[in-house]
Image (tube, rainbow over all chains, first blue to last red; front, side, top):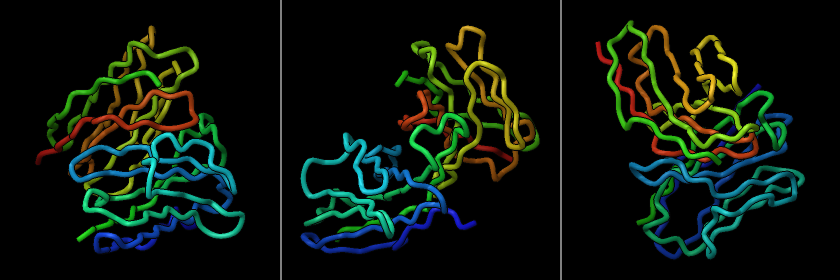
Length: 117
Length: 108
């Protein structure tokens, strides 16, 4: 049973370009969470999605960032017109249900590291 | 979410027990205590969670005080591979908010 798959693992973009990060949750998981970790900082929640729905986007920057989790295919975190401050590791996590108190687990991927030149 | 307080760093000798404390004095009745760790720059890894009873699994033990205002994660025999940042999170189970955590350094 494959874990949470994120790609690309490393992405380099120049300022003003677009970055697309993909996350395939574990099989049977319909809830996806995106976190961002700036260098030498902790993980910050960005957005929580269920299939075809954004449940909580309170951590998403108001501009340039968007996320989706379509009925088919991976979840996508899209960053338009990237700036140097977007350089960070972006982690995706999945769970089989929104309230994971029964198992306690969010399953995290290994992250996508975005570098903006 | 209830706020948690953890020491920023701790050292532990290899083979000894590592006891990582966490204060969560504002925890509410339906909130669980979760522990995760992040080794170097990898994705966070679930360790254990509990509501009010002590819990044990193959990785660690979780001791929660009777008033639930604090807890301790115990790694019974720390190895060098346990060097990581350990996060204590209190939540009702619908989203995790990571704080600064405790950077545990296991030394030979």
